[in-house]
Length: 376
Image (tube, rainbow, N blue to C red; front, side, top):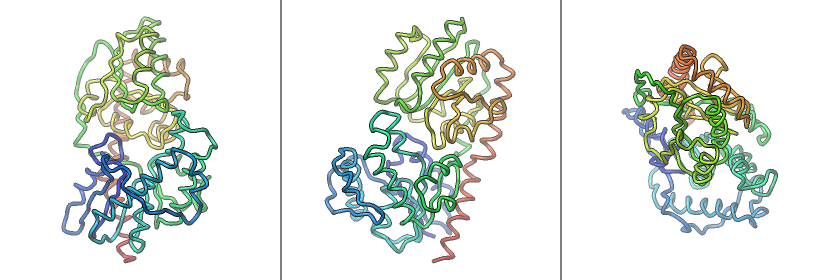
């Protein structure tokens, strides 16, 4: 069976989706499966010029928005690049971004299409203060869900909470199937260590949606209580300078290390004790599963896929969004009780190993793909 995995970002780009798919491809290398990856290189800009129309809405209603204009130009570029590069037929296309899905169905209408919706771009833009809630960009981006429902043969997503979110935009949301992200267990190697000073770590893009400002405030409270720690922040983004300035203002700059982007943070995480990320929204939160596989105690917020991964008090701790005081309390609890921290980390590792194992996810994907093989 010949399958095309259609990405938006190239596999070498940071992020759970693009970095996960190559590991899936490795598991499909057998005489019965042939799988290719496809994505739009970053250097391709402004090449496409063909007109675009959708079946379920008129995108031109939102065409005055610069964000919508940029989105549609990227769509046209994806069309241009796909026509240039894809010369063979596939039995199935599995897309991981709305642009990739809609372009593939436009160019290969007879090929079955699976679309996995991994996140909410509109919610990310709202939280990052790029667009207004209920504004034209929001309506454009959420209209794409209905277009995907019209075009795709199957829609999948990564968490039950995000499936519920889609219910507001789809006609038959009950048909959406849930399959979480999978992680290659061989990439994660827990290391036995004994840190005298608790090591806190977070890995994310530095944007408002990730709540790192709240984390810094919580860490300031910990310092005021006389608790020692080191906070490792791996990632880069548009608000890094603001966060560094905030750490200085709060008097915790000496306890905080900003590393910038790191290609393989999973090689660094096992030396820490606690993974913490107070996101304001997460469809899944891949980095929590990765941290769990590194045998870290988890602290996160009660949102989206995070609250599905963490059972509060069992394999991690959950706190309300934007509540620095509650976050500080949770961190203090795991910092000062090493036995509790160990039990949380062990339970998190056990759940991640069983639920988010790449082997299990690949087996589920094979069963899904085989349904379309019978139909062809």
